[in-house]
Image 1 (cartoon, rainbow, N blue to C red):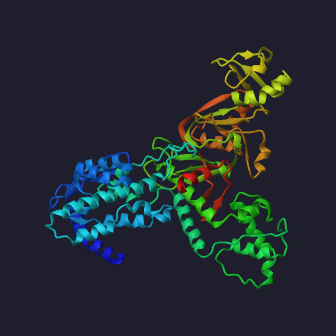
Image 2: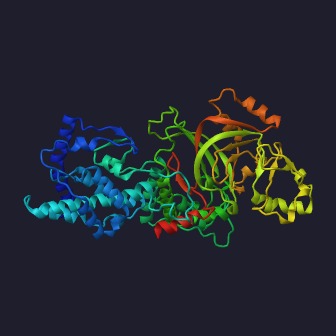
Image 3: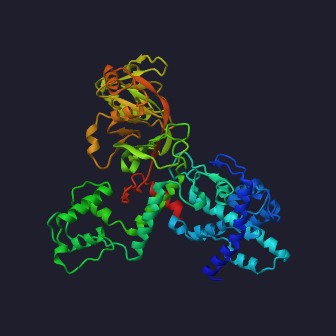
Length: 586
């Protein structure tokens, strides 16, 4: 049976029972309750309460034996039993012994899985089309027809869980792979509840029934993936060979300029015989600067060094980069901010060296809408040896005029050598040693045998006093976490002019800390800008507890598409892309 004929048969089978179910729903109210994934609904009772024909059932033994024969379905065995048990083992994909329309939607979603960066073959464990043909060929009174119906139903449900797990939660589980660094709050979609939504037995604010992704960032990357694959089918983009040149600057004439035009204008026809196209003119310089901006490079318009390297990244590599960053979006919680918090969040993207603040202007925890960008600033993140961890937490405090409590690792590796050569070195850095008590007491540096100091045995605390030398600057923002990482000011403001800003020991330094403080304290009128400044000027550490915690994400995306549809790429500064690619592509 051809795909078009199969579609016709499925639709013909589906229309009448679907209409019957719709009428039944209107008559009974379907008992549907609008819920999210953490709630139960009474939709199943309404859906199956008054069928004109007995609804065909399967049973736990049939499901168990089927899964034993298909080990590729065993991964989600618990979900299978949870789903069927909740419906008293009634079949899911048939009404009145005919396929429901959602069957076709699932099969189409699997057929188009490549658009999601997934392989459709992974979800076609069973040839459902062939089973449907066999089912359709059997007489209605054939005893084997009902068994085949159960087989189709269980196969479709298992196929759904295999596909939906990868699509909604990710092919790679970062909790199971130590080399994949990701400690952001989990995406806790309950796939059995989502399937009830797909089958229209339950309502949800999430578009599961359309097999749609949950985040705009993912959808924009998916659209760009299709564009790049279309370009790949047309031959991709050329490599730029400067031959003996070190770089191209405005006014240069060379064959490489034509390749540069083709690279920056892929798919556009160019007259390769036009000699003017071999001159690096003002218009092309502007395009190069725009490319540099999109790739986080110095916007000098010079083609060479890192710019040439970025231009010559193969299209296939960029496609893979897009796909693995789509995977990261699947790990992001479906609800960006818990209902209990203000509907705003802070987003730090490590490879981009940027912080953003997003909020729902209506602050409605029940609504599902794309958050609006309210603020952005440059940040400095950890060096490779002191990489900033990837995690999420909730900001609770703003600390004005903070002490810097120096980690013991820094005491051993960086302070100890100075103290061995100059016992008064701490004074030159406005630092002191104190006891680890609620009311810290001063400790004389000369009382410590610095030669024996290690990270593990140092029993005191080195801290830097508030003031102009303090490494945390005048402000820090705390969201207590296992990594002891936070956001803070810095006296080294000149470093923000660098394009590659990985200089810290792991914490995130802010370009505009006062602006962030004003924002997070805006619901506390007593803490206006003047009071913030005056408190900092006292030089006394002051903690301000936020009236409501604020969601913070510290993430790692090396590819994303902005609101204007332009793709951005960054270097894999910590090697996380490389490790994820090993797991994702095998």
